[in-house]
Length: 394
Image (cartoon, rainbow, N blue to C red; front, side, top):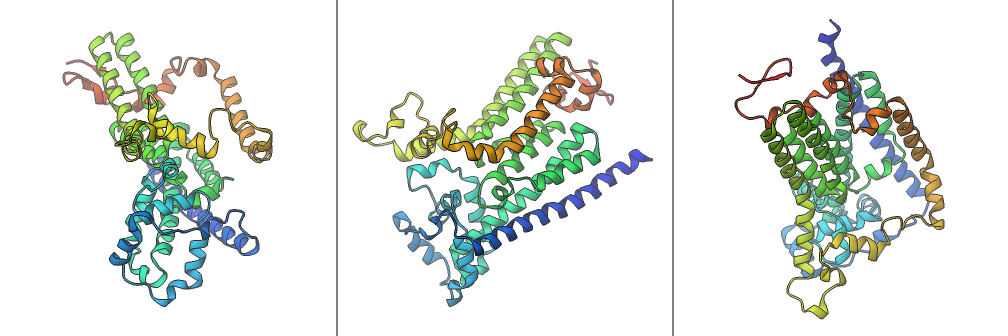
């Protein structure tokens, strides 16, 4: 009876979680507006909005209906004044229809694409009322906040698969909704989209749909550069599947097939980021003389992203560890301490499982994630999968 009611329990928890996630986003936006009305913003980038290069502004003016006088209303000003920090770059890429300056290539195109899509379709009727730029800002907030709600749902689903505990999974997802970094998930930043496609990819991977998981991981790489790290999930799966095929089933050909499949999937995940770097190289480096090339163009591996992070923002390996950053480390210390304690607790509980990368997992633990290790989608046609998840040959 309890098992039969479990799906209903999960659906009920998801419905409640949607309300929590939605409320948390509205609360963050309300607090943001309230503090902006009392305090002067530290970053004043919102006031900087020079015309787009290549006369893009004229094209927009021709394609869009002329804004009414209401375009200078308080709603429009409030929306546009909220564009600060990285939001300035995402909005400019959307507004100008492309990447104008070298440093803008640090911001990947998935979020600008969704902003442009919404502002020119769903929210297009609002353009005459508040102006195109304000509509783009509104679209950005809708994209990021809706993506966060879906990310919370997928986190709950992933937690249910891993923890086998609906209540614990629900509590963890609610905590995620009210996490200290909530402002980044409600601003026009790429964190929400990245969380959605990364967590969603893990869910599909654990559900046994590896190809769908690869698509989601690839989309995460269109949102943020660290999306390529999600290929590590496929590497982990490939490693265990190859071990299963070669050591336990004694099938060399199947093991090679597993490696090839895993490699192709990893390439697919990394492809969006690599393609974007190639796009930047073509726009900035291609067709210029050697003495006119930017320094990164002359590298053996001309990686635009690393150069931008280092040259414009001083970001690099261990370069953040400076005395002046001590307040930021203190601000992050509660979460860092909690994460560290969780890792230490897990290692103490199952040291052999941690050190062996899961190869010493018990049969019960393997069954809990059976679809992750299953060879079903790479097996040869003459192999049958029984209902008990056991592999046998006819």
